[in-house]
Length: 629
Image 1 (cartoon, rainbow, N blue to C red):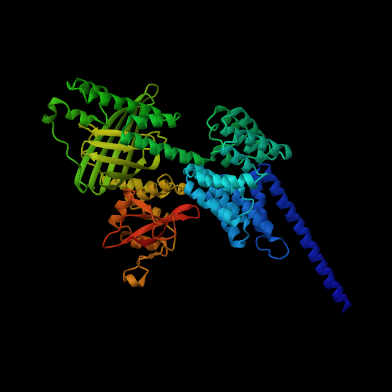
Image 2: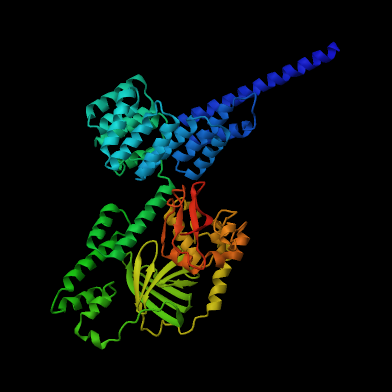
């Protein structure tokens, strides 16, 4: 009997020793990850934290759960500060599911308030910072600071002063106090306090704070000096260098860019995409609205843009037109048309000429068209080379088929010719198509989306990511196609789509941006692309109207993409489609507590439903069908 007892004791000792040995291994792994994160080695730290989390996430008794939660939280922070907000939310949610410890949500709300402030969403910044303060009322001075700065941006100086006073009174050893002094006009005191903090502890964060204060004071050299010290000490999160407002005064300087290049801190792709999207929206607005002021704003805001030449040309055209149209002799109008033969104002200019009444009137395009073939062409310049674009369109009611060619005169290689075929839909005057480049050496070769605006039978607008081009009715019978084989076009494009589905038509990775999401949804609706729309939905997809027995209506509840495909025509009614195409939506927080919810204003008396959109795990999704009162 004693032998068994001894054996049991030995086994238990071995188990305990092994457990503690494994605990030490895990503890070293955790500490190594912390050191790597603090040193700015984020890839190595991510690997270690992930390894630690996976090995210990299910252990509840022997190993401390706190380190597991910390590992998950640090993974979220690393993702967040690298602007991967979707990945960050996934890890933050894992922490929330494991513990209700106040620190985690308080810090999560804090960094989200900072993001909202950087993006100019001051209401959300106030909301998140207040939530952070609620979770952690004591010593949460950074949350008070972000809220105070947001109040200043909203011209609420009284509330801002109250938060600043709280920080100055209580945050004696906090960098937040230095910023509070800065924003209340105590500039010397702000610098003096940060220097004092740095003398006591040369933290990388303190150097960054010192750089931020000098940036606000337009002391570029001192800001860059402290910024480099911060980087050398391991402060390398792209978020702080490229996203926050702290370094706005020096961010565009050559010295700042050289410093980023020196330490290989690149601007994240997500920021590049956002900036390109803003630039494109500003570009479209400039050309559509047509004012000299907007042209000047675009040139000032985007000096490095590839579209500067186009905007400058358009600005000169605008100025020339404003001078010419008021000439009573009409000589300047004739000179204007001679200089700008493809001008946006061509029709308006022609109407001012004496012989205009002899010309045939321009008829507006009908919303629903019978079988028609149009030919449009344009002669312009790309990179100082003459280019010739020709579009032949076959429009049959709401369907569009076409063939396009693009010729560029090149002095070295001769003429480059690119050809494409496309098909899609037209609603009102908006045409959205899937285009396949089949010839030439185009960088666009393959499948892509294209948007056209059929202004009338004489004018077609071609809208790309780089410019908006006006094409005019073509009288050259040599380039006009009297017969377009629509079946051959569909077959050719569909064959290519089988291999390239979604590749260039949609931007699912960027659906954290509502404008990108709506653009993709609009394209999918125009093309009746049910697979793409299913990709933009969550499943199951409830029907809040039909699922309610009180309404005595058929339910359009979709459990899967297959259900959505079956009920597609009922869910996406003509009213909903028109609303999506016209971008006619509004925030739906008025009807419930989901403040970020978006509803399209497109229900009808026959089907009073609308689609509901909100962020799901960081990206926008159609998450339900709802009743639009």
